[in-house]
Length: 465
Image (cartoon, rainbow, N blue to C red; front, side, top):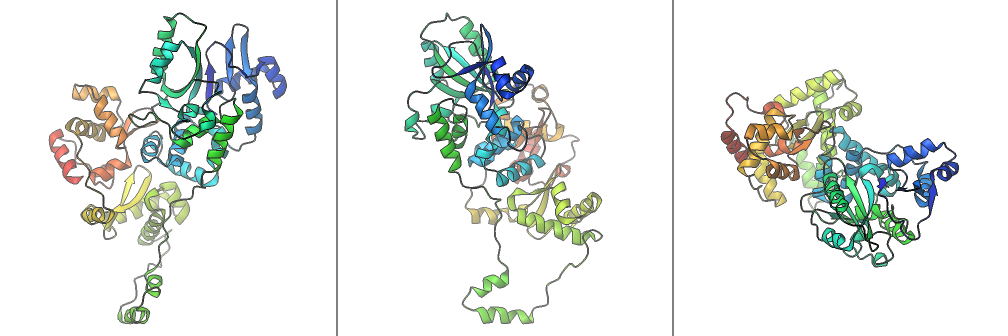
């Protein structure tokens, strides 16, 4: 279900192949359509001395999935959906950081509530480009020890106890790799003499930013099962289908909250609890129209953000829920900045808003959750974070030019923690997690950049964290 290109070599045993003319005839389309489907990754193809040929099973899968609503998702959106569905916090955080816009995260969550991952599988094929390669045994041995590969599909069978996939698989190795890694492998193979005992491997090449956390060597079970759907082997596809079909339906993480009156009815002192309220003044109620009254609009926004819990909401979603204009929403947001709810504040990252606990109550929240205080970042990481915060969007080369030193390790640390991410132009920007880390409501709350001292800012961030 991923984009697919194949290097010339021996055809895997048991696989039926079609010429381009035959594939076009089965599709009822012109041959140019077959080439388009190969380039987009919808069909599995192999370039041979006699020309391009198409795997029959991939053609059959495309015909079955052709009626799936919605076109293929872009690679970042596909990875975000996989990360959210995987249940892996690190993968989810990393893949959400690949999204160009904040509202794309809300769309990914909504997509998973309306469709199962098995139903979404045909739309996720552009997450990687599949490349079949034939390698000598000694090169295969080296690859199997390479820690930079992320094993998936049948290569993840042993850790996940998929015993029926231990043999008779079309590929000896199935792994995700980066595009630069594949280029290095191809250079090595060009210098290696071909041998008749070459083994077939499947490489899933990620052309964009790497979606996996650092040191990850095994794909999550959900992703490994999803990759099994690409196999011509019926047992592999059946295992992938069973794993994905067995996943529970994902629902929005909304916490049910009872009112104080409802909680009191469950207590032993019901009469005393309810009776004591007669002496209290009535609760203040905002009965204004949110479309014309700014405090009322602010109250409606807080109510929506409260129900959305940790998900937050975009400006577009808040406007749809409250029925107010963009101008009224901005006025309500300004009102909330001046009159924040006690113990809370509305945090904003571009057009994404979220209700969070205020910094002054953070110690009580941490004690309640049992979470230790975060370990401060290293000085190089804080320097890079400060540069991104004040110079965003900025390229990696720009950071190294300002620091005068390599920033790869520090930047990897920030990406893993989700404090920075790449935008649609592959430039670095800060994330909502950065606002939490620095205890800021929005980027406008950053100190003025005049005479900024990196060490001073680092100390302020350490104290705030």
